Length: 472
Image (tube, rainbow, N blue to C red; front, side, top):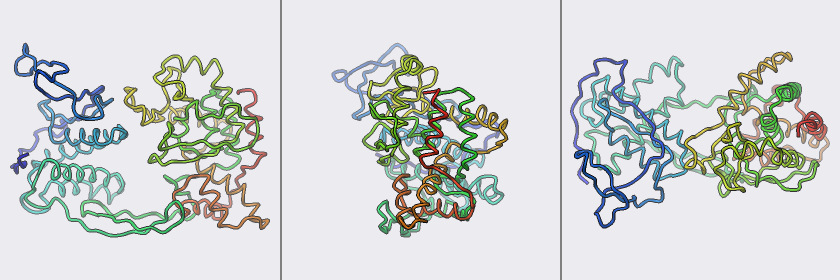
């Protein structure tokens, strides 16, 4: 393939309010290539001659149709070839890649191209001084906003890294040779603790395009576990449950209970299948494992294999719900899954509240729990406020709440000398599937610093059961 030639400057756009580049999303994106008549699987109209057709066949790839695909358009409505091919390669190389992640990369590239258009610079022109090169021009866009706190370092770096990946793609697959290097690299090694507690080292490549990240020290004000989490106190948990009962929404009540007593993340709860629930589970406090992540139908963060313990009584409650007319009506409305792959939590239209990454080719949707966030803001918080609890919380805070409940549940054993602190940290780490004990230690530090008491013993579970006895 010939190298991409260097381009010269483009004129500045005359109207900055009309971006010359635009991102669109195409659904049911069919992949094909032109072929000989003998190998044809179909025929398609020729753009040059509207009455003529040419033969096409499937691409030699495992995916024939993409559920959705972002495409970047030029000002004249034609496809921007280099950017769109970059996004397409990511789709084909990883068929399970989150469509929203790919869409975000498309937005970043569109923003990058519009920034260059305003500056009158072509994306392949790396001549001149360093500050004139496309990559450094884009970084400069974020310098002042980052310093003023108008945009976070993480958000700016995410956009810049998408641009870095784009140029890496051009250099590797399109044989692009820039006149000057698009960035400078430096290499380092960092130590980390693996899931078994062993110290490991990994190689990190840095560029001078990204902004340095400064890790904040929680100092007991919050727990750093996939975000800045603040657990709910026992009183707040009770108000939460009472408000859910008042709202009379069985699906939301069950979803929140699962979060409180298992610590599952939202993507794991909302992709639970009917086959993951233990049939014939007793109404007891025994713990029954659920497998999630790679090799299962249930999503986890980064597809990490996990074994999550759920109380038998909750398996029992979910079994009753699955057998209810309410669930049957929802699952029969819109069903694209086999019997063992049926989602437990479905909306009124029968669509899952969260589409698993394994099912995104089946649905023209990449729904990721937006209804739950809407429910918290528009329904749950107002009801909690009428009960004197003006709490600003997110669904992910329930995971931290579960963790703090675990700490309190086992803290008494430490006080009695039946368990030491290292055993406590390891117990909580395993129950929460933390990758390192350093994350778990944050729960103990939060407890010591905040002096807030949490409770998650058998009496607490009995209290939840008693509240839900008239529901399922």
